[in-house]
Amino acid sequence: MSKTYSGKEIVKVLRRIGFIVDHQRGSHIFLYNLERNISVVVPLHKELKKGTLNNILKKADLTFDELKELV
Image 1 (cartoon, rainbow, N blue to C red):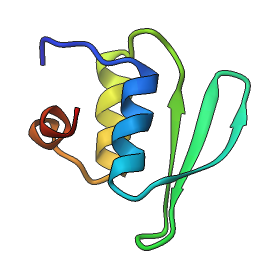
Image 2 (cartoon, one colour; image 1 turned 45 degrees about the vertical axis):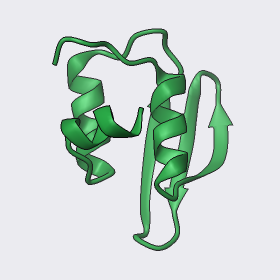
Image 3 (cartoon, rainbow, N blue to C red; image 1 turned 180 degrees about the horizontal axis):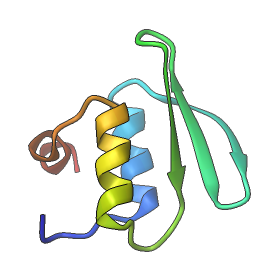
């Protein structure tokens, strides 16, 4: 996991797989997937920390390899 991802990149990936932007509060975007009934919060930082990215991927049911393909 050498490449770092920005919050903006993660939001684009999540929108590609069916998440919609619900709302934004400050620097955090709240996304929701109606089909799977999942909500994910993504901070709009230039670089997401490893733990934050792992938690987002876990909630969205994505692997790191799938993320690399979608970016």
